[in-house]
Image 1 (cartoon, rainbow, N blue to C red):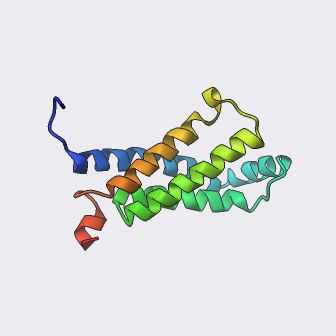
Image 2 (cartoon, helix red, strand yellow):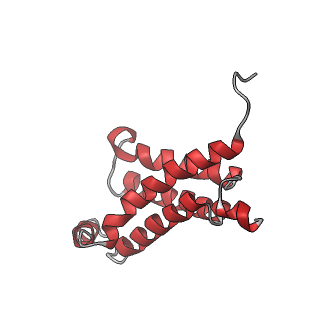
Image 3 (tube, rainbow, N blue to C red):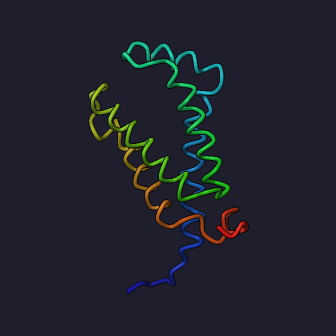
Length: 131
């Protein structure tokens, strides 16, 4: 039983905007001058520094793709995989706990999975292209 009618297209739009903006927000600094800080930090963790611009590209342009609704199920599934890898990194390398650690990664992973299942909805470029 629901109190309100079901609006999956509106839900997909709201979820795309929320997840996409978070990805863009976290990816943008990795593509700018702040990238050097991230590279130094990754090197100190024993990780390759090339992952910083790669992650910036994935997060920023993946987020943009989600916001616009371009190939939403594919971009969302790849974003979920990316969040799975960042969660693994947070747990294994950084030894973070769930709270104040990797809770955002898990939330983005689950939201991206929901988008992969929902698709872009009626308010997306996917819909305009008939995908």
